[in-house]
Length: 283
Image (cartoon, rainbow, N blue to C red; front, side, top):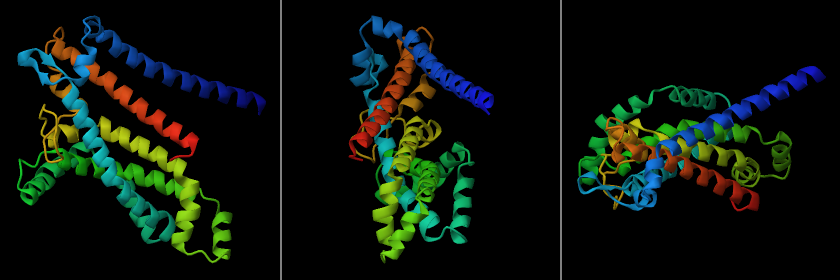
């Protein structure tokens, strides 16, 4: 057993180091290819400035604002839905109806993203256009709703798994004290399961921020700073997809590497902030 444990530890350490090396390697690759922008002192201007190549302006500020707006809206839409569904599946009806619903949620994870995009274009966008009578319907709201549906299965499965990890002895003790289902949920389940729930939120937010097709197909891809959720917007990932065909030596093409670095930075900040708040007991 000692030999097998040592081999297992080496394999796990090797996998961890390989993952770390690949992650840092990708980041280093983007930094190296974006070096001409750093050398010219254009990095900060690109982060906050507007996008207007005809006037020599290659700012990614509108794309960063669009990315954060759509991602936060998607998480805000998905969270209450996911919490309700996971509570139904994991607490109220863990068998029977809950199993059927969980199976449907698991099946949703296998649906290609482009299918969600087509549903958004032909069903959601016309609905938003007719309901609000403003614009084409390709806007932050449409993209946020569809992304919220896309990330819901991930969030639901994480929440459900976190609920099942609550020790049965805790629930039995609550039953012995006469607690009802709502009291058990708020005073037993949530305090015990919040760490896993935060992990699900982080992963869901990362997927919403890193998704390309839905943002590309539904958000409208406007390059201006959005003023409301009814405005069209372009995300960093959609910008990469649209600019990838530009001349390799142009500054316009080099901006895709700044997009990648920005996505890395935003994801890292979110993860670090949540972990910091979790250690302080504020989450």
